[in-house]
Length: 375
Image 1 (cartoon, helix red, strand yellow):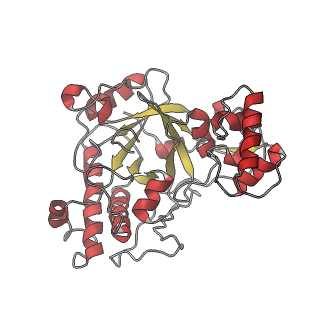
Image 2 (cartoon, rainbow, N blue to C red):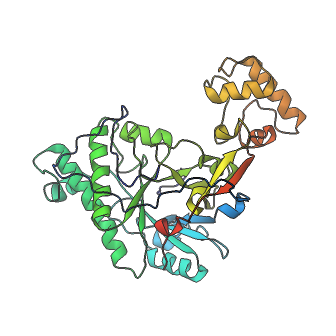
Image 3 (cartoon, one colour):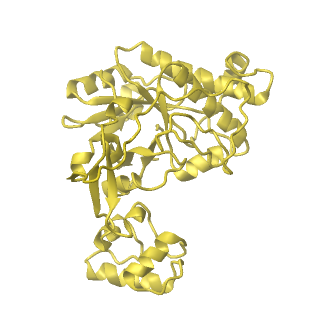
């Protein structure tokens, strides 16, 4: 990300697990409590109604300290304007225990828009001082290293819940931002400790009555957690690749395995977001073999099922390897469609290939009240 900031299946419990899928041993006999129940999605009806993707989603944005004034330590970036369906507001100034200096003003702005409200908070590996002050008190065994780290994470979650309690807002859910930082960074050499901190933060928010989900991205999540698997909801980011790539992430396996409920993209000025169709009680059904891969960017050297599907679409011998022959075919296709003939398959090329075509089917009740509240 360009600026320091943030940031089931709908199974109602946390699976804090290692890459191999086994449950990580948390430093306490007390089990991680259940996430507040998320309504089950009913089966697709025999004759489902259909809708456009736009009607099944809601557009919004996210803000935090970078949108504060320069006097407050921000960058004076613009706030979402009227018409935003929701706004995700950051509680911190990029680190635990450091409050967003214009939090109250941003909450008031969301209220003036009449938009739905969501919030997020940062998690981070504790400093030595934080570990000393909170590591031995909390629900975990403070005589062990992982127990102290979980207690430190718990303190981060308690701070977030307390920060919310001081405001006259009603939100049922807190997104937990887990990503590498330039300051107070997660150590790559202690992924077990990182997972312990995250588990503590999640537990504290759950103990306070909030649902919890994760904001991150694949490489950052793997670097920090070792690829921890979780059923908790996901807020995914497409970075600078635009709305089409963000919407595609709703149907792409997430960094943790949890269901993607919100997808983000950004430019140099704004962070934009869109809810996934499943949040409104709908599901997107691919009408193209390429649709599941439309959130990816493919280029020479890549391998896998997405490359095989691309080769079939372009009539190149199927090998699963993005080789010179496929690159040449992609360049030719791009040139014929008036696209930049760079041989890289991104959002515009996927769209030209027909990969963005999906059908939206209504399934059941909206889940928006599970994730959004009001000012």
